[in-house]
Structures are given as structure tokens and as C-alpha cells.
Image: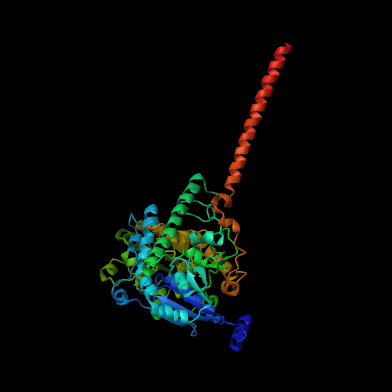
Length: 532
């Protein structure tokens, strides 16, 4: 606390030299928007000049995310923004149960085009807009911070001729490992359908390789389609995006080492997961709105259900809804608050009295309330982090993307259950899971134990972010901590040629030993026969 006060005092005196920083904040995925906005607050609070550049790919309410009044916000509205406002935001309902999109192989092929197509129009206009490019260039930024999922910001930094520091609002992005030297995560991170070591068997490891291969295809093709769209916009070829961030001394991710799977890593990969959480507000939450206060007083136990902003509850398949309604009816003693984004009088009539539909919910405030017993979530990283810091049990129902990873990541701590979205149609199975979370004390105890760990991390995530960021801005080309072996190819990196040589040498030695033994045996036999 005193260090922060001293730092702020030095900033006011001008002793601390603030950098001029551009944060690229794509208005696409809400959890990404929120993470980057809160990152901007932290950086600005430490005395740096921050400009938040927000190009709109879809319409999101970004009000209230930026707290620091010194942050300059530049909202970039494309020509088709009115069209975005007047049409329903793209929410990808096909990820609920479409058999093609949800097939692992087809998803790896189709998802990159779906995601890249959603950002192409705004990105194309931005790169052709000389006025905004010149305006940004005239601001003389020292550095651009941009995510590695939506690549527009990385290429924007290239056009502005400014160093780019990459970051990822998710726990990791597999196609950056070769840039920053992170070893393979095979066997370290649980894949869908696999068990973790030491229980994992041969078929689990085989599935790990299969899933990892498809994940790499997904991420690589997502980047490829975006790069091709950008090249079409500017009319010439562009450098590979990895080459544009290769000089950065750090790569920031939204992973937290005390929450995430334990994986081998390298010094440039900086985990800042938890910067979005305010322990003081968590421990001293603001009062809930009056209508929610009344809802929480109805019964002893309340459960919150929310599937995020990209996948919406009202677009859920009918058989999934039927399973959830059956669960509601099976637990009349529990109150349910369901984030349901559409006014639907007919659907409301099908629900029992213990269910409240809300188009928006104050999620952090509800999670902080002791009367809320459990949280049913899609497992977006924002929601996963929030429930981890709440000490509340959770039913993790992943839909797509990194959500299966987040579900298994949290479930391994014992305070959450990873639940297949296809099992939502099974009302009995769903009821059993909810009852366990609400009434079995082990889930609450484990969730609270995790919260205790996260509350007492040896290095505060915000301090970790700022120390590494300021180091990277001071030494923008420092790459000595990136292992050189990572650039040598898979054969040299894993010594496969040496292993093959040693195996062949061993086989040769065994063969030679066999031949010598065979020769000696024949010689001794012949000598014995001659003597006789």
C-alpha cells in the first residue's frame, strides 16, 4: 500500500518517466474487451500515458470498464456500424450443438473462417483509412500492446512502425510457443476426452496428440485467414505476424500459475492472470440492486446460471432447455437466476416459480454474496477467474474455444464439476450435479481453499504485470531468455536424431553381441567335438 502511495507521489512530481502506450482493444469478445480495459487502468494508474483504441467488429456495451480518467479512448466506428447496431450481434449459436461445427476435425477447419470473417470488414476499412492511421502515427507511441488472437493490432503496430508487445486475454495460445520458446504442453494440459497423468494410458496420450494437432490447425488457420484478409486490404504481402512480435522480450497471458495447469515455460512468457480481480471489493462487495436482494431472500440457496455474451441462453437447443427446466422442477427449494437475453413471455410460462430470467446480471456482486451457493457457467476465462476468486462451487459447461480447458483447469482443484453441454438435456444428471454443488460441503471447502491460495500469491498479479511491462519497454530487444534450441526444428529440439542414432547403435551392439556369441558357441562346440 505504502509503495503504491510513494509511486503515485513520484508520478505527480514527474520523477517517474511515463511511456506513451497504445493498447489495441478489439470490440469483439467481451471477456477480451474487459481484460484489456482493466489492463489499461492498471498501466495508467502507474503513471504511463495510455491510449485505448477500440475498433468495433460487433456492438458491445463498454461503459464503465475504463476507470482511470487519464486514459484517452479512441472509438473507431466502421461505415457499417449502423448495420451492426440494427442487427442482432453475431453470437455463434451453431456452437451449441451443430454436428458439423462441433465435430473436432470440422471445427478446426470451420471455426477459423467463422471468427476471421467476423472481423474482416472493420479491419479492412481500418487499414485503408489513412486519416486514422496518420492520427495514430502523429501521437508518437513508444509501444503498442496487442493480443495475438485478433491480429489487427499487431499489424497496426507494424504500419505505425512501433514495437509491439503481444499478450493473450486467454490462458495461452499454442501457436506462439515457437516464438517465445515454450515447450510442448502435451501431457501437461488436459485435453477433451483424456485423463491426466498418472492415470492417463496409451489411448489418452494418443488422444492428446490428436487434439493438440487439431488445436494447432485451428489457431494457425485463424491467424492465416486474418493475415490474408489484411493483405487483400492493403494490396500487398505482409510479414508473418510472428516475425512482428518476435523481438518482444515478453509475451503476457491471462494465465495464473496457481489456477492453471502446471506447464513448462520460459522467462518471456509472463502470466498475469488475476489482474482483473480486486480483493478489497471481493471481500467488501457493494450492495446488490433491490430486485436482486429480494430474489436472494426467497430461499436459503440461490444458483446463478450464465453462458456469457457470445453464446446466448435463448439460442440454446430446445432439448437442452427441457433438461434445465426438469432440473428446476426437481429443486423447488433452490432459487435460480438465469441470464436469458430475450424477453420471452411464453418461455417464462414454462418455468417454475423458483426461476428468475434476467437479460443482464451483476455477476461479480452476486458471486461475492454468501447466499449464492453455486454458479453454472460456460467457462469463459473471465467467468472462470471470477468464480475462482469468489470461493463458490461451479458447474462448468464449456461450449467452444478455450472453455473446455478452463473447465478442466478449475475442476482439478475440487471445487467445480466439468459438465458436457450435451448432458444439459439429461435433467436427472444435471439435477444430481447441481445438488452436489449446493449440498456437498467438499465443493465449497475446495473452492474456498483455492480462493485462499489466490488471495495470498507471493507475487501480486498487477505488480507482476507492471514490472515485466516496464522491463520490456526499457529493453525492447532483449531476447537472451528465449532458448535458441527452439529455433532448431523439432528433430534437433527433441534430439530425435540422437535418440535414433543411440537406438540404432544399441541394436547394432546387440546384433554384434549375438553374432560373437553365436561364433564362440560354434567354435567351442567344434573344439569339443574335435577333442572327443
